[in-house]
Image (tube, rainbow, N blue to C red):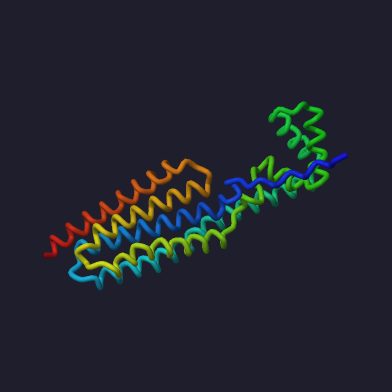
Amino acid sequence: MTTAAAPMPEMHAVDRIGWLRAAVLGANDGIVSTASLIVGVAASAQDKGPVLVAGVAGLVAGAMSMAAGEYVSVSSQADSEAADLDRERRELAEMPELEHQELAEIYRKRGLSADLARQVADALMEKDALAAHARDELGLTEMQRARPIQAALTSALTFSVGAALPLAVVLLLPLGQLPLAVSGAALLFLMLLGWVGAYAGGAPATRGVLRVAFWGALAMAATYLIGSLFGTSVA
């Protein structure tokens, strides 16, 4: 008699949603904001010095801003999750029967018979009542819990990497070629980022590529226009 092998754990795209969102957002912002800043300044500058200063300043300020913004926003989410869990913990201690009925009703609405729903609620609450209510009543799971520090570090790091790409183009090419070269390189980087993000998240690649390319091109066109108008007015 052979024993059936235990099923291998499956990997799902949702397992990566916490850090993937912050990584894609950070890298996308790094490329778009820094490339747009460089293109705008290059359109009105007389030499590469101001362009480099603006790009480096944009990288540092953007990375810090992304880290602070992600930390504050995800911390607010974590605080809300903690408050909901505290309330569930109190309710389980003060009125366990009502909480049991509430959980059983959730399972009944999902298609289980009333008897089976009560049995499932019994088993899950006996094992870990708070975890059962967090998952099935509040929609909170461990893989999707808010992690402020992870989000902040991921966003700052990926923003810096994304911002460094158009800056590298500035170092390699003369001033006159920068607006077109930085724009083209940034669009290429954005399309690659869109593909990577879509692949890692299990989403259609074409949609991700077109989405980031469109908004990146729009941002760089707007800043180039502003830089050109400013340079013309100064001249």
